[in-house]
Image 1 (cartoon, rainbow, N blue to C red):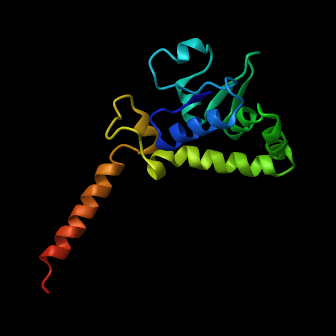
Image 2: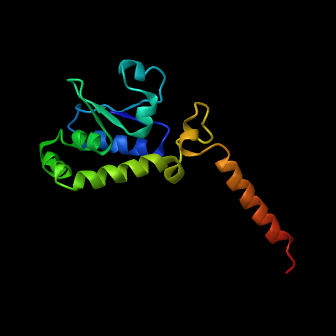
Image 3: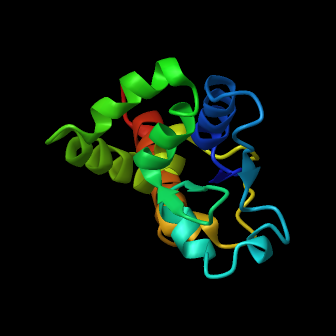
Length: 150
């Protein structure tokens, strides 16, 4: 399973999915590590930034919420619960929720290392200048309140 190792939520979720899966059935690897994507031809950094990817032994790939479902379904007891994902309507709701969380994960949950944006990953979730503009606005509001008469 390829996950975003720079994302706090993703890192925690990957550990939890490995723990829920049958022992030895799922290996979690951060696609952010150098050389990892070289092992998976055709899988791009951009695709991995959108959703975690589970690559099964026969080469099939599952993305997002379905990747999590497939990972936990390696345990027979959890396979029954995981199969609910395929009920009409459930998959669509889960996939939309997953996509929204994935698109906002750095804003909501933060990154695993402070100010680690050297590879451009923040630009996907924090458009250039957004952080600095918010900080300047907060600072100016604070200065105005300090300078106002009591």
